[in-house]
Image 1 (tube, rainbow, N blue to C red):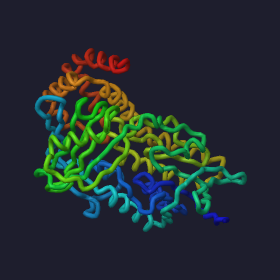
Image 2: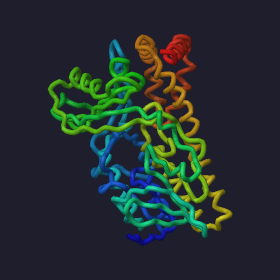
Image 3: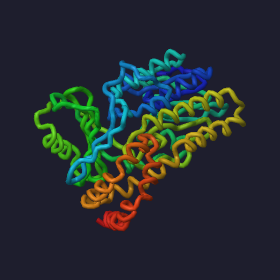
Image 4: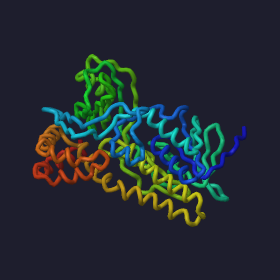
Length: 399
């Protein structure tokens, strides 16, 4: 059966945060935009923990809205392998818990209102260059989509960048993760809880995020071990009387960004570009803001002569790196070191943290963690731990 071909100026693949932001921005800049989503419903399935900083939302140009917000957050409680928790509380709320399905749908509706044509149940199978100019996408059992510029925001595991001549993130650096939606929990406050240690989540961490007065989103990711058993043990220890209302599996990308995010008539953003914080796996703000930059660049390039487009697309790559690359580099180093630490060294690090809580509460930034990482490494107590950290890191390589 012969399928028709849909023409547009900008074709965006993936209706997550990065894709919706890219499509919206391209449409705002007077481009004819098509947004393709492989699932029947935007935002489904959802794998995200849903923690977004208020500064990050502002950076994305999104205001708080009861449609997607669940709870305001005023800090975090860090649970070391042993010993008393360390609490970092700010004077005012710093983050919001969002219902990720509703958040994505909110952004998609905003894009559609700006003129974007949204097509669901559209799974892209191949990127291709057309001999007479422009680019296109083949869709499984569906029409072809042709445009001037393609933006790939289809997430972890995408093969479109390879087809466009780019490297992909190291997909072996996807950590398995699992998350429960718990009901009937103990009273929830306004703090996120994080759990560390090789008995909890070896190589990464576990989390508990309040979503209501007696409900929480609890999950973990790890480098080794049985994810379900580790999560079940955590729930049994901390919320033994709770009920699991939903289970969501997923993965956390910790590879860092790719070395190039553009090629001829093609851009890549979000998880597909490795635009993810290696320390937490969070990518809403980085991917969303990069999507804004990609949308602007794509709209401009689509209306420019072919021989001038490469400068515009290359500028997108430079702009997002100017904003985030330095922090991502430091977060990547911190993650690689942290992943190999023994429980004893982790305990000592958290003890050192206690002495600097006022500075951490004042200067820490959820979205730009590299600054506080560099700042704390200059402190005497952290510097004194570096030989132990180095020993653990070397030992983990050979274990």
